[in-house]
Image 1 (cartoon, rainbow, N blue to C red):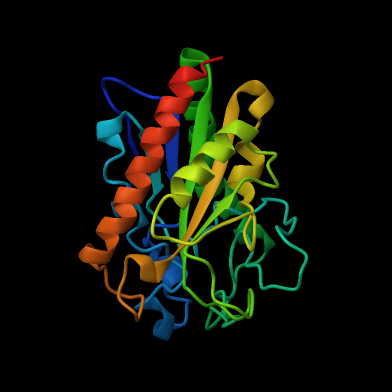
Image 2: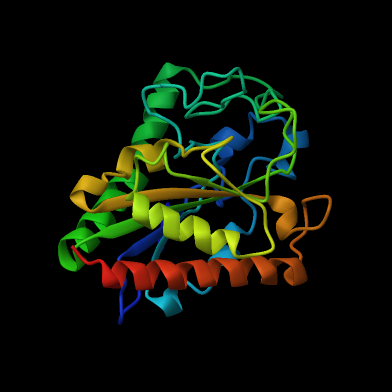
Length: 268
């Protein structure tokens, strides 16, 4: 199995990369056989179908990278040395999760020890991040700047993270440090010109990918978009709803039109 898939337009490439670190579902048998069987049907923390919402990307000249393995194998959006993303008491799963977002243990037996965790970093975490860094460097050097867009979704309500339901869409810019202010403003305006309620930097301001890759002083912008799953899935958040998804796709497509035009007019 390929660790990840990359879609790179042959013509008309624009300086944008969309990353899908949590849409994969593959779990090697050596790990799956130790997990709680009752959790395997749902893979509850998966960003189901998120890549389908960006199906327009290649036709717009956007490069994409999608991990094929589950975040329960390794979480590509966590700090590899274990630094927590937040310190407000919410549940934060680790780089190799041993619970899901609700705090339910994933393993029936033999949870990964430090040696196994380090090996998974080598086998799964580092290849994705190394390739992502290469893609960023290539676009930045050839096109003068780049935007990395990290695409995510989450259940509308996760009480172990916060007591209230999440907004429709949450743009994370690491407190406006991971991207140029003018670009952030353009994205926020484009997302807000939609039927959806949009928040900025709360309750999510960007995970490890956004925090580690963004460096606007070097022309490298990085943003994270989190969205509630029931925007494009049924009310049970288990089945893709094409009718609802169409509205999300339209909003995202218009937003990337705005981004592409802005970046073309503001080349470094």
